[in-house]
Length: 175
Image (cartoon, rainbow, N blue to C red):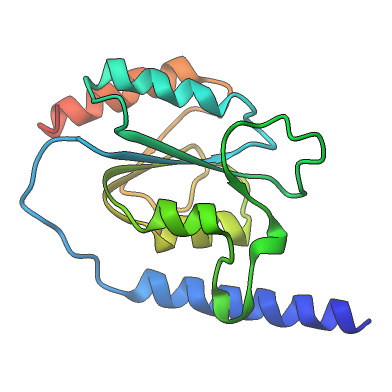
């Protein structure tokens, strides 16, 4: 019972932290062009997070320009994922995310953040809100408070997502 009460407090603190992050004004730079891309991927729904590396060629980026972090509801028991990820257990007190891989990921500045998730999961939203990015994109049914652009495609439509991303980045003169 005590564990359930702790979890409720963590979720409440996480929700409060998310709301605070969303209320903060975002700083916009005059910089144009995409040179650093961050991807937050729900690996429970889209297991092939490595496919985001193909964006390197599509967007003409350098080899280390794309950083990927995943989310899984539970721990990876078999160790079958090569992508760093967070789980719900990483939600700490005061809405912090207690995961060293996420600390490294969120410590960088991104020109583009791809929120590749559909579910309304607190940790995914909190991860996105804590990352410093100039442009944020998501997929169908995504939270508009977290994203600047939302493409009408599901997680399984990766080729459509790629085409739409390139098209809109060209329209915005980012490529």
